[in-house]
Image (cartoon, rainbow, N blue to C red; front, side, top):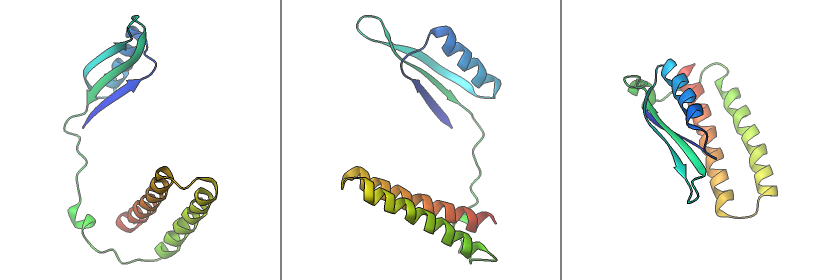
Length: 124
Protein backbone atom coordinates (compact mmCIF):
# COMPACT_ATOMS: atom_id res chain seq x y z
CA UNK A 1 0.00 0.00 0.00
CA UNK A 2 1.31 3.45 -0.89
CA UNK A 3 0.75 6.60 1.15
CA UNK A 4 1.40 10.29 0.70
CA UNK A 5 1.54 12.50 3.78
CA UNK A 6 1.14 16.25 3.16
CA UNK A 7 2.01 18.63 6.00
CA UNK A 8 0.84 22.25 5.87
CA UNK A 9 2.40 24.60 6.55
CA UNK A 10 5.73 23.14 5.55
CA UNK A 11 8.27 21.97 8.11
CA UNK A 12 12.06 22.12 8.19
CA UNK A 13 13.92 19.43 6.27
CA UNK A 14 15.46 17.92 9.40
CA UNK A 15 11.98 17.59 10.94
CA UNK A 16 10.75 15.85 7.81
CA UNK A 17 13.74 13.51 8.00
CA UNK A 18 12.85 12.67 11.62
CA UNK A 19 9.35 11.68 10.52
CA UNK A 20 10.83 9.61 7.70
CA UNK A 21 13.11 7.86 10.23
CA UNK A 22 10.12 6.98 12.40
CA UNK A 23 8.27 5.58 9.38
CA UNK A 24 11.27 3.46 8.44
CA UNK A 25 11.62 2.21 12.04
CA UNK A 26 8.00 1.03 11.78
CA UNK A 27 8.73 -1.03 8.66
CA UNK A 28 7.71 1.46 5.96
CA UNK A 29 9.86 2.31 2.96
CA UNK A 30 10.13 6.05 2.31
CA UNK A 31 9.98 6.57 -1.45
CA UNK A 32 10.11 10.36 -1.65
CA UNK A 33 9.81 13.62 0.15
CA UNK A 34 9.99 17.30 -0.51
CA UNK A 35 9.07 20.80 0.42
CA UNK A 36 6.78 23.09 -1.56
CA UNK A 37 7.88 26.72 -1.65
CA UNK A 38 6.00 29.89 -2.47
CA UNK A 39 7.36 32.62 -4.76
CA UNK A 40 9.35 34.19 -1.90
CA UNK A 41 10.91 30.86 -0.93
CA UNK A 42 8.69 30.32 2.10
CA UNK A 43 7.67 26.78 2.96
CA UNK A 44 4.07 26.10 1.97
CA UNK A 45 3.94 22.36 2.48
CA UNK A 46 6.05 19.28 3.01
CA UNK A 47 5.27 15.83 1.74
CA UNK A 48 6.47 12.31 2.39
CA UNK A 49 5.68 9.34 0.16
CA UNK A 50 6.01 5.92 1.73
CA UNK A 51 4.79 2.37 1.32
CA UNK A 52 4.57 -0.94 3.06
CA UNK A 53 4.97 -3.71 0.56
CA UNK A 54 3.71 -7.22 0.89
CA UNK A 55 1.36 -6.33 3.72
CA UNK A 56 -1.86 -6.65 1.82
CA UNK A 57 -4.80 -7.44 4.02
CA UNK A 58 -6.08 -10.79 2.79
CA UNK A 59 -9.63 -10.69 1.49
CA UNK A 60 -11.92 -13.33 2.88
CA UNK A 61 -14.15 -13.57 -0.17
CA UNK A 62 -16.26 -16.32 1.38
CA UNK A 63 -17.11 -14.06 4.32
CA UNK A 64 -17.64 -10.98 2.18
CA UNK A 65 -20.02 -12.63 -0.29
CA UNK A 66 -21.97 -14.87 2.06
CA UNK A 67 -25.27 -14.15 3.76
CA UNK A 68 -24.79 -13.85 7.51
CA UNK A 69 -27.98 -14.71 9.37
CA UNK A 70 -28.23 -12.76 12.63
CA UNK A 71 -27.26 -14.75 15.70
CA UNK A 72 -27.51 -14.33 19.45
CA UNK A 73 -27.64 -10.66 20.40
CA UNK A 74 -26.59 -9.26 17.01
CA UNK A 75 -30.04 -7.84 16.15
CA UNK A 76 -29.92 -5.77 19.35
CA UNK A 77 -26.50 -4.41 18.36
CA UNK A 78 -27.80 -3.51 14.88
CA UNK A 79 -30.78 -1.71 16.44
CA UNK A 80 -28.50 0.23 18.81
CA UNK A 81 -26.25 1.36 15.97
CA UNK A 82 -29.24 2.41 13.84
CA UNK A 83 -30.91 4.25 16.74
CA UNK A 84 -27.76 6.22 17.56
CA UNK A 85 -27.22 7.03 13.88
CA UNK A 86 -30.81 8.26 13.68
CA UNK A 87 -30.14 10.64 16.58
CA UNK A 88 -27.15 12.06 14.71
CA UNK A 89 -29.19 12.24 11.49
CA UNK A 90 -31.83 14.28 13.31
CA UNK A 91 -29.13 16.66 14.59
CA UNK A 92 -27.77 17.05 11.06
CA UNK A 93 -31.29 17.64 9.74
CA UNK A 94 -31.96 20.31 12.40
CA UNK A 95 -28.65 22.16 12.26
CA UNK A 96 -27.37 21.89 8.71
CA UNK A 97 -28.76 23.89 5.80
CA UNK A 98 -30.17 21.94 2.88
CA UNK A 99 -27.08 21.52 0.71
CA UNK A 100 -24.87 19.10 -1.13
CA UNK A 101 -22.71 18.82 2.00
CA UNK A 102 -25.71 17.87 4.13
CA UNK A 103 -26.67 15.21 1.59
CA UNK A 104 -23.14 13.82 1.71
CA UNK A 105 -23.30 13.78 5.52
CA UNK A 106 -26.48 11.69 5.37
CA UNK A 107 -24.96 9.33 2.79
CA UNK A 108 -21.78 8.89 4.84
CA UNK A 109 -23.82 8.23 7.96
CA UNK A 110 -25.77 5.52 6.14
CA UNK A 111 -22.45 4.08 4.94
CA UNK A 112 -21.05 4.08 8.47
CA UNK A 113 -24.11 2.19 9.75
CA UNK A 114 -23.80 -0.35 6.96
CA UNK A 115 -20.11 -1.02 7.64
CA UNK A 116 -20.59 -1.13 11.40
CA UNK A 117 -23.31 -3.75 10.97
CA UNK A 118 -21.19 -5.67 8.47
CA UNK A 119 -18.37 -5.69 11.01
CA UNK A 120 -20.65 -7.41 13.50
CA UNK A 121 -22.15 -9.80 10.96
CA UNK A 122 -18.84 -10.89 9.46
CA UNK A 123 -16.65 -11.03 12.54
CA UNK A 124 -18.71 -12.38 15.42
